[in-house]
Amino acid sequence: MSSDNAPASPPPTPAPAEQSKGATTAVLDRPPPRNLPHFKVILHNDDVNTLEHVVQSLVELTPLEPQRALVVTKEANDSGLALVLVTHRERAELYQEQLQSKSLTVTIEPA
Image (tube, rainbow, N blue to C red; front, side, top):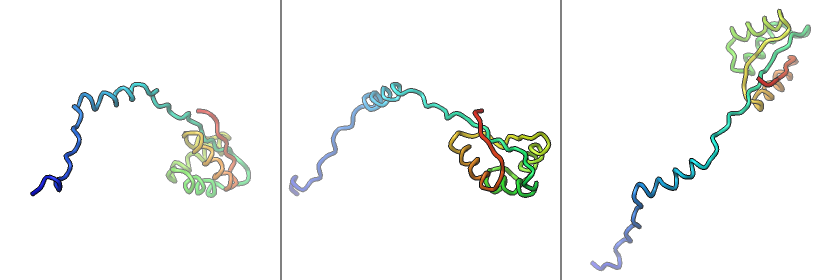
């Protein structure tokens, strides 16, 4: 057999200290990740929607279970406002738009 057909040997692998040295420096130079600010999604009482419609809309459009949606709906009915959930701004705005499309009165505010 001739050595011309032999596969080329892979380049030498750097020692473990050399491999991690550059990676460690890069990680340390980065600022720590920032958490997204939280926003409250608030349901307002109205004289238009039925209790059943509000509960059904909350269950359909949010991660609330039916029992929790009922508690939130009754709280809004009794006190005028109820906290639906807290999430980051983009998702809070999405919930607000979706719930408003169901004729619910919903606002968001910083948590």
